[in-house]
Amino acid sequence: MKPGVRVLAVSGGVGGAKLALGLARVLPPAELAVLVNTGDDFTHLGLRICADLDTVLYTLAGVVNTTQGWGRADESFGFMDELRRQGGPDWFLLGDRDLVLHVERSRRLAAGETLTQIMADLAYRFGLTTRLLPMTDAPVATLLDTSVGQLEFQHYFVRLRSIPEVQRLHYAGAAQARPSDDLLTLLRSRTLETIILCPSNPYLSIDPILAVPGMRAALRAAAVPIVAVSPLVGGRAVKGPTTKIMQELGIEISSLAIASHYAGLIDGLLVDESDARTELTGSVAKEFSKLGIVVDTARTLMSTLDDRRRLAEVALNFAKRLRPTESRTAPKSWSGSV
Ligand code: GDP
Image 1 (cartoon, rainbow, N blue to C red):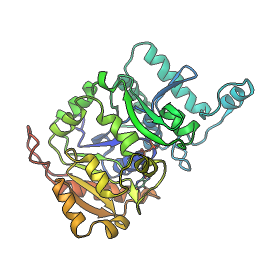
Image 2 (image 1 turned 180 degrees about the vertical axis):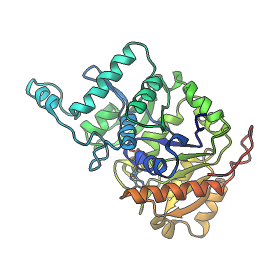
Image 3 (image 1 turned 135 degrees about the vertical axis):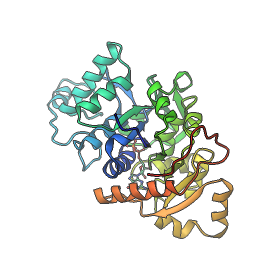
Image 4 (image 1 turned 90 degrees about the vertical axis):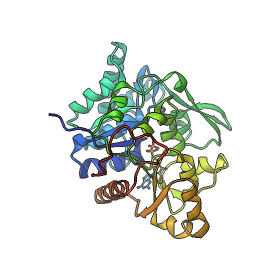
């Protein structure tokens, strides 16, 4: 019999994939599934590109370019060179091997397969037993209202290097989307024990997932502890525009703000030690408990594979000590073992 999934990681791209890899190394990989943001997906040069799904796929399969955290290791750029020579848009880098994935996925989508089916098959072909679950099979696009007008995510993030000031975020298409049947089945399964929100960008990577109608409710109805790992280390994002966006949206840059953002969804937040020293004192600690969120601290910076594994273990053990909040219905017994 196939083993059941015990842990669901919720991830964006590079930051999320780091912890997902740690989890895949400390758990039997078939007992892990990763729910991935598709708000970053876009159509470019006629191809459907799913940046976060591909980052998680390449990372778990051990073929990622570890220096940059995305794209393939052992890559060539003949297509890009020729595209540039012929005057095509060259702001989005596509390696030759990477390109094959986009061509294949686009072909299969056009032939009527769902993104969930395609990613399940690709994961298998890359040798994974970990399930990769797109947040939905419907197209959803993260749009940013910025100082230079409305931008699709990749235009903001890659072409304009996150420089424009962000005023508002929208998740176009989310209202018409729904979680896939595979995801809903997993969330109802008796084997699931823990949900871990990876330290992905809460606004650009996790919010699009939570914007899918029914997603929050389905995650909560799983009635298992939900733990998030803060993306802040020493009051800053390790990489990317998380704190820049918080500042621009008028959100205080603190672990408490991350906790407030996920309030009602998570039971526990893992905060980096460096932030705990300054933030988790006296009255602030009380604010967390008012939110119904238990806080714990750990070294959350994942530079090495060992760091990833260690943090994965800490997050799993933290979840073990928590019970899902009482407001949640508990349709199944909670086994508590990880
Ligand atoms: P993207 O979609 O490629 O931008 O990646 P994610 O949204 O998954 O991750 C971006 C977030 O990951 C940023 O807010 C970073 O601060 C966070 N991050 C990256 N590496 C680490 C790390 O080693 N530790 C922690 N705690 N956060 C990290």
